Image 1 (cartoon, one colour):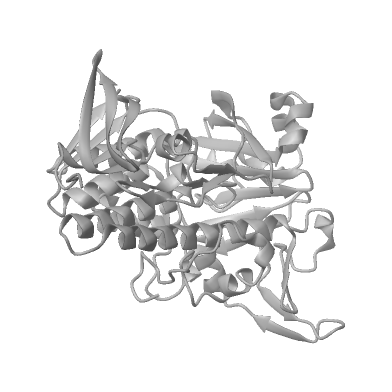
Image 2 (cartoon, helix red, strand yellow):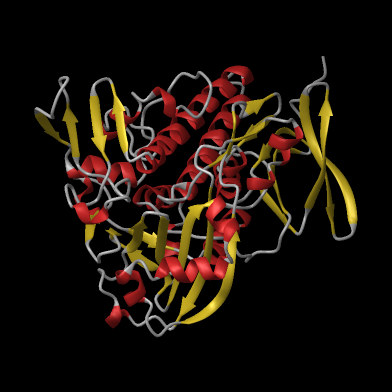
Length: 455
């Protein structure tokens, strides 16, 4: 049997986004060598992002929160759900519960991702090459043993005990091993612009809040990525976007949400209209002989609650922790792969169920119904009742609702801010009862928050 315990590096990471940087930082801090290959030169554009509060906690644990704090990003303390009549509801992040962070940041991803990649570059044991394109996966039998990459006009082969797919939608290992599955439940697409010259005196919302504008044909986001710059995007079924000009759809949908329209009065376009399509895919196999698949490379779905960076950071970190156990001889590689896959699927499954609850208007399972609307019984959002989340679980007994069980505000806010692995979150307990919303094949859930120990 070939000996794969030695290579040029302990790990090769394909991709320098949040998942790849998180993996590299974590593994190198445990005394191992990492080669990180990023095909672009940072900073580079990336859509988003309104970070979750749990994301800020992970950044602190990785030692980069201070650098993010000094970058001048907008502080986020709440989420506003607003509709076509100008009605709105605000979710206060400070009400997340004792001992939990009540704030986070909206970030411009080009600068945010560069901060993370720079942190990886500065970590002893990590070698980062930008503008390095992986052209081939090297294999020995079923095992991935390294990569061939092009850099500075030359190709080079490099080997490692583990090769990590952090390549996002490119999915070099996920696609190379034919592991990726396209999903078609939601079929949503987005178009967006960045607007400059924002005047906060015209903002009807609380300063710094993300706004989610809700209407019958889709939804809009308004994210202040810089003090004077805001990202405004509309999300709609892909078939609607295909039927009209994207710029016309963006403008028409904006007219439906008065509070967002008022917020951007007098702004100018600083980034022209861009689009994002084909949101949904996943892989049931996320680790195997010589490899781990992390972050967006393994799964991507609708961006309605901005969970992507948190999921990327946490899966990258967990894959590195499992890799370190294997490299030190403390864990069997197959068992580590199984643990990692269960961890990955638990988090993404929770996030996906949250999204499905929103789009499906209600959650019904085991005799319980979770109504999904930001305004309770407000009828002015007829036809758009799926937006937001009402804090009630209503039990039925073959007839009208006869009991009402309150869901504490902090369970809701935690759900929207990264509690995807929680076994005790009463909101997610209800969502997991709905069998039709299962994303992956059978797996053993691995509950226990990777951010807040003991939860």
